[in-house]
Length: 150
Image 1 (tube, rainbow, N blue to C red):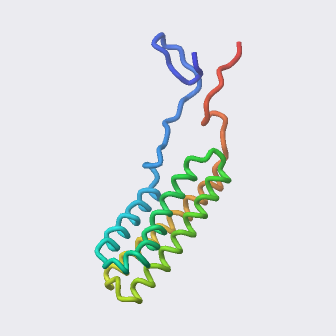
Image 2 (cartoon, one colour; image 1 turned 45 degrees about the horizontal axis):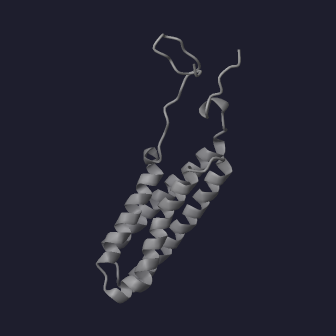
Image 3 (tube, rainbow, N blue to C red; image 1 turned 90 degrees about the vertical axis):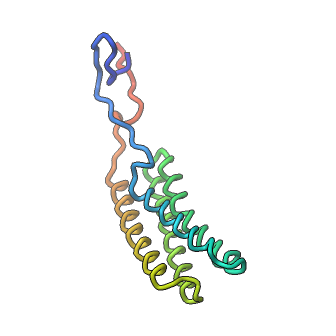
């Protein structure tokens, strides 16, 4: 019998916690929306604009969520935080590219403001996620429980 799991005969061990998935993270969900918005905007541009600034903008937006996901899959909290820092850098790169796109007449005022607002909110969520990882302490019972040797 594994501790924490109730068997059909009613025996129990320590509590088992539900497992959180990456899709449960609001910061990850918001990063995916940012990337989808970037894709929709750039896909309407002419070839030259897509091939130059567009690719950079989309790669930066995609990199935010990709780094959050990679960090989520890491075992140690320090590694998780490091990938959040990479995601934060990509978010700042995204902000730079949307400003360039606007300066070059590729984004309308509404698209620019929407992108700025989404990036700002995502930055706050990302910083909050990093803070929560700093506070988190690995606990023995949140990993794979080891049966008591009796």
